[in-house]
Amino acid sequence: MSQSVRTAAVLAALVAAGAAAALPAFAPAAAQHPSTSGKTRTVGVYTDYYDPPKLTLHVGDKVKWVWHSSGFALHDVYVDSGPEDFNSPTQAGGSFAHRFKKAGTFKLYCTEHPEMTMGVTVKKVRK
View 1 (cartoon, rainbow, N blue to C red):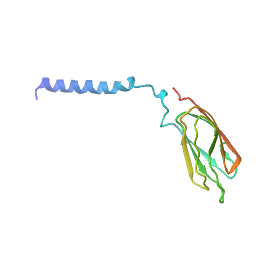
View 2 (cartoon, helix red, strand yellow; view 1 turned 90 degrees about the vertical axis):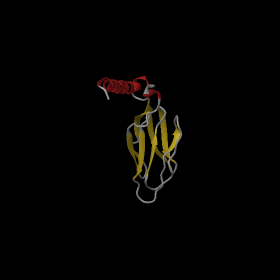
View 3 (cartoon, rainbow, N blue to C red; view 1 turned 180 degrees about the vertical axis):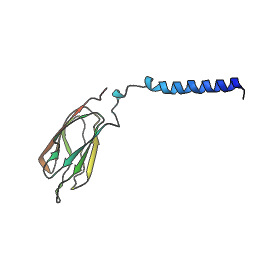
View 4 (spheres, rainbow, N blue to C red; view 1 turned 30 degrees about the vertical axis):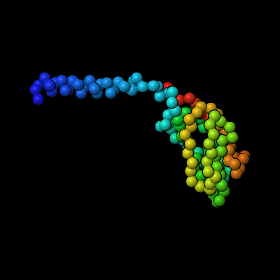
């Protein structure tokens, strides 16, 4: 391979690498779509309460509820009101996770113990 052919090949590779590096700048802004790699917050599920009882998150963040109740008490996480609907299985132990895709205020409760409530405020994605 001649020197000029090698030089052309190296230049072509550099141009291709530069173009590939510049492509993310032309992609749509990530703020338009919910993040799938937000922060994860943990909430304890105890005998008659969630801990913490209030959270503030951003769209794309995930909450993981971890059951710590003693005995055979069944609990779940159920949406009473909010911009999206979800609920966990009713269980005595284990965990459940949900990624929040919409901004807004959520009121959650345990269907087995309606006085067991929590609030989640989800804000728009950080820019």
